[in-house]
Length: 310
Image 1: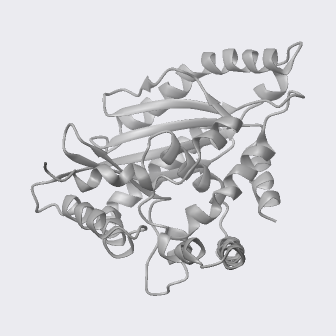
Image 2: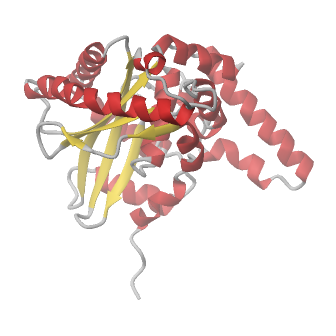
């Protein structure tokens, strides 16, 4: 019997919790085409708690619970898993948790909350595990870590193709502003040939201690080999929405149902805005997954995230 393809092992490296995500976030059932077969949009939103309030704090806590897995490679976290005694394991887990939070404090940007949310979406929704813990690389002055907001991978067995997802998270007041900013960043990414640079990060800083898998990934990333690699961009478009406050009902479930109805009515316009951006985009031959996410305000989301971190 032949050995299974090494890339079929990618899903076992998904560390994010679908259950934790689904406790805070729901989505419209439709996946909308964005002008072509190579681009699609999904619409996610915050669930409401029993008092009819968006689960913003719960989502922020969920993200912080994933901070270690997002920020650190398996090499950094392995000591906690293999410590000989329970007490040693607890101390190691406390240490790596402090280390992840320290990275967040020492290398702050305004985008970590969105980047961490996009990490969660890519792992639990698309089933594409993170390939490089880029935040960890910020401690190494010899490594250039500018570029995408995340590198994730998924294997298409039918086509024998490695899908690489470069993340781009934008939190703006408006949908149009977030889309404009996202596509400008992606254009700059390719204008400066950052894809090849990020492939190099995967080769030299692969997140997992799985050498056969790393070698298989490298073969697919090498454009001179027979194996195929496909570039995708995953966009998180976060924006302000007054609908959380205006959609009410006799219970929180009725209020959420009303929000969902209004959100579904607004979705086609969001898709139109994405199509307009993509129509004139010079790298439109690539593949795009767009995730829309309304918040009460994006500043509320950022503030909730940093409260959870502290």
